[in-house]
Image (cartoon, rainbow, N blue to C red):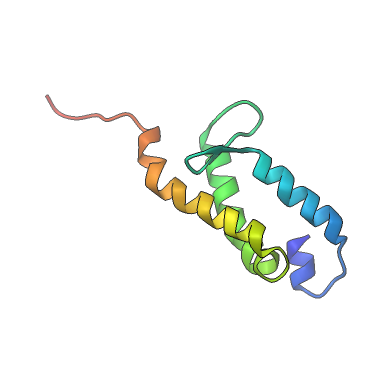
Length: 91
């Protein structure tokens, strides 16, 4: 819907807000979102890749407080992402 709004089409803004709030409910902290009950590479990539697009196409202009949360969450991921991987060092 953000793409459609960005291209000048009418959208249901209540549904857009509902969907944005639903995405925020998946937030688990430290930049991570749950996709169901799990953490995995896809959910990390998808939530943090599409949120900036949504922010640019719709969020900053229509729902800036939601866009700010998506931005804060993505920034937090950049601080915590390396913790997802195990350290493999030489002995």
